[in-house]
View: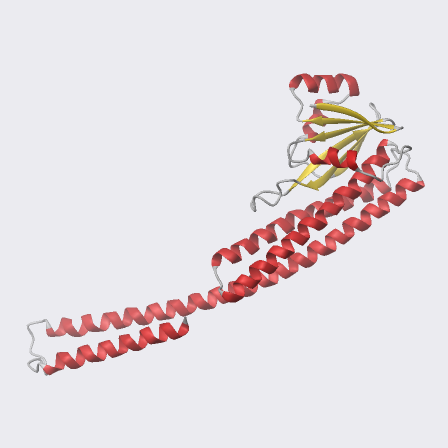
Length: 300
């Protein structure tokens, strides 16, 4: 899908959403987009960066954002790159199913001014996309508090695994936030395009938002790591206790077999003809077994 919209007097935005082969050809012919650029736009593993094409006078900015479905799968990278390609008057935004909301956010930004150029729109979009990280990090911290409360009642492997899933998501967020910060630092000192004072101030604002997100993610990651380590230690202690108990069980269960095995042989043994000796043996065994069961019940 290709959707055009004049977002300011100086910027026409063209959203390229999962284009068909015919739409790709149209974009290539109209806006001088290359196959290589299309490859960058829809490569889920593409890193955040900037690149200037002097021949076509196009600036490419790839920015990592949080996907709409980022929290649904704990094993999947919850971030995805979105590519902005622009010149002095036109801004192409390449989106997929997971990043389609980016163009909608740009259209809904109240801070857009009529004198904004494509770079101004991109910087304002980066500011909005950076704020999304705050929400998902708060959500992770809330989930951590819920899991920690449940673990105080009963320590189980499932809750610890969920904590590790939250930790994995935070690693992805931290990596994306650092990449975005590096991108903006490069843009701040870029000499391929002219950047005015207002745009430099907006870059500073974007960097402040990213720094705040990094600090939040770092703190949340440290807390989850320490909580998970503490409860993993508790599980290890409980496992050691269980192994000790099973060892005692195995020894106790082996003793009757050993004793009765002797008396089952055709060998003359002391007290073998005394009927009451079996009663005493069974009584002793049952007392010991009862003591172990009582101990297990008290541990629970």
